[in-house]
Structures are given as C-alpha cells and as structure tokens.
Length: 473
Ligand code: LLP
Image 1: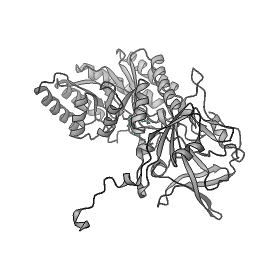
Image 2: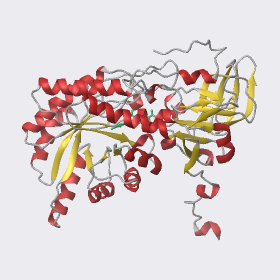
Image 3: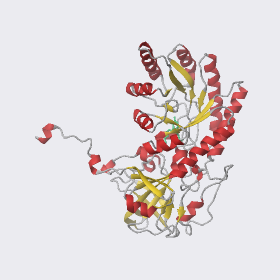
Image 4: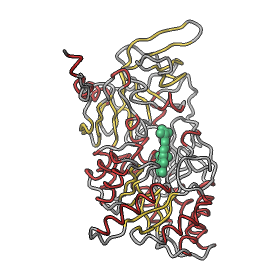
C-alpha cells in the first residue's frame, strides 16, 4: 500500500501525483494504481499539466466542463495487459476492451491500434467498433437481450456472439439456418456465457457472477445447452465466458472462476463442441482514492494465467486461448474531468458547498453507486488542502453531489476543479438531464490536444424534438 506522508491539512493536490505503486516488472506504474494520468505533472505556473498540456489553458481553449483523456495512460494500460498475457501464459491470448466503459470512435481506434479486441453490448457499440475498424474476429457481442436486428447486424459482420440465454440461442439457430439456406457456408461463431456462482465484494449493482444475476445460463443448464449446440451445425461453439463483477481488488475469485470455467470447458469438449477459447471477463478495480489498493494489471493477469494453467493441468486439458475483457482498468485513470467552480454556499456549522458547471449528467457514478472521487484545484497545485467542502453539481437535484467532504485549498469562482479517474463509465453513462449539453473531450499527448468529442450544442438538444402538427395550428 502506498501512503502519502503529508497530513490532510498540509497535503496539496501535487501530492496525489506521487500516488502510484511501481510494482510492475518494468518498474513502470500500473495505470489502475495511479490516481492521476501517468503523464500528469505540475508546471512552472503551479498548474496541472496532462499530456504536456496545461489544464487551465485547455479549459480556456475548449470550454468547461472538459473530459481530458491522456493517450499515454490508455496505451500503457493496453500494452500492460497485452504484454503480461504473453509473458505469463503459454497458450494463445487476447485482451479485449469492454467498451461499455467508454465507447467512442477515438477510444476504440486507439485500443485497436494497440492490438486489443473489443467487447460490445449493443448494436450502437458494435456500429462504433466497426467504424473504428475492428475486424469480425476481434469483436465479441455480449448482452442479455439482444434484439433480432442486433443479431442480424452481428451476423452480417460475422463477429463472435456471446450467447446469454435460451431465447437468443434459439433465435440464432433460426437465423443461422435461414442464412445457410440462402447459401452461407460459414457457421456462426458463438460463445456461451455462464453464471459462475461466485461471490465477490463490490457494489451489488456491478456484481454479476453470483447465481442471482440476470446474466448468462445457470450452471445447471450447462448439459442441455451443450446438447442443443452439438445438434446445430450452423452454430460453432468456440468457447465459454463468465464475468464476476467490477471494481474488484481481490484475486481469489478469479482463481475460483478459472476452476469453474475449465470444468465446463472439459464438459463442452466431451459433447464434441469445437471449443478453443475461455473468456474470464474483466473486473480489475482502480484507485479512485488514496485508500484504494488494487493489484496491478500485471499481478492480476499473472493470477488469471496461473489459475487457468493450473486448472487445465489438473483436468488434463490442453491450454485454450485465454481471453480477458477489462474495461475500467484500461481507461478510468487515463481521464480527468475539468470543471469551473461557480457559486459557493456555507451552511454554518454544517458544511460548505462549492458548485461546478457539470455534475450528475457528465458523471452519474456518485449518485448511482455512491462512488467516491478525489479532486484537485488545477490552477493552484501546491496550495495546502485546508478546507473540507462538498462539491455539488448544477442539476436541480439535492443528490447531485460529486464529492462529499473533499479536501481542497480555499477556492474562488473561476478556479478549475479537476475530478480524477473519470475515464470509465462517466461519458458512457452520461445524460442530458436538465438539458445540459454533454462536455467536449480532448485527447492529449506530447503537448498537443485534439478534440475527439465535440461539445454538444443547444441545437443538438432539440435535434430529435418534433412538434406534432396539431400543436402548431
Ligand atoms: N465483461 C462483462 C461481461 C461485463 O459485464 C463488464 C462490466 C466487463 C467485462 C468490464 O468490467 P470492468 O473491467 O470495467 O470492471 N457502470 C458500473 C460498472 C458496470 C460494469 C458492467 N460490466 C460502474 O460505473 O461502476
């Protein structure tokens, strides 16, 4: 566990820069253990710099609030997954990006350039992944209620489909049969998602591996599913999948998961299914606060590889292709959200509120999961954090609080507040609540910034509004 020596009252935003364990073999910090993007620095103006760009200057140029995405951090995380898989597993491997964390053209394109595959969960995510150039073999389509139209899009692309339930399997069989009759000779590559029955410690909304979950086939349905698939020549069962949850720091559940998956893999082979891949899901947590202590990417991957190798040995099976699908740990720490501080309110003896120009619409995680974030004042990095304040958003909702009891230096309207670790499940879960426009996003590296998400305009907000004719009469 890394500690920051300064006591809260003498600590400054700059101290957060030191918060990363350098526990990887290369000595390079693991992005998921770093509170700030890896390129973060304090410059001569005492301002935060990310990707060589002054955050205050970025806000002046591109507006506020602003998602600032550090390309180096994202690429480093991709490389660490890729390299560790190669290092610790004797069989073939593939890391795929769980793009629900942040699916947009530029992010998908970077991940693709780094040689990762992609996990999509809707026609929209699939459409974006195709636009970013992912090939069919690199693409895995998840989801517990894929529509017929979504399945048809997936079949047209030829991507791998992770079948979740009986309705989907039967629909797929029917669609594949129809394709075969119209001359298609290639069978549809299908993976099977199972609920592994593994408990882990995370928020109940983001736990998926326990038996009482809406995702995947129950373990007792295994035999019937394998039998069904063995009679469907148009469906090629390429492997099995399970995912136990998200923001997990423990390693043991992944060990248990390997045992469950490998046992099922043996069963699938016994049914004559051509399975060659095991997908262990994602779930590695990140450091949102100084007290979070997740394992590094390398440690997590090593554990998964060792567990799968040991389970295969124990069951006398050849090593399958190992697939893992991280989302949060690839991208969360690569992004910070910069806001401009506005009004402040002191409730004597109770608390002081400072308000920013965004909130639950650009980061719904605090109000949804009571997620805890850290923030710093980007234009006064070495100022001691002597105040305890509540950072509120600007939405008409009392619960629109980004951080309760944040430690900050005294602030004034116009200061730039940067919330850390906002790359995962912020933009992808954002909304236009109260008709706020979504922020812009800039990609930063080597002192250059480029917009990868345009700021929404008021015109965008009414793009889909229509006035029924009788109202305009
Ligand atoms: N694979 C599957 C099948 C998943 O359902 C998920 C996440 C992942 C991979 C990636 O998990 P990660 O590596 O990101 O932990 N909105 C919530 C998180 C929901 C996670 C949903 N599934 C949040 O903001 O915490």
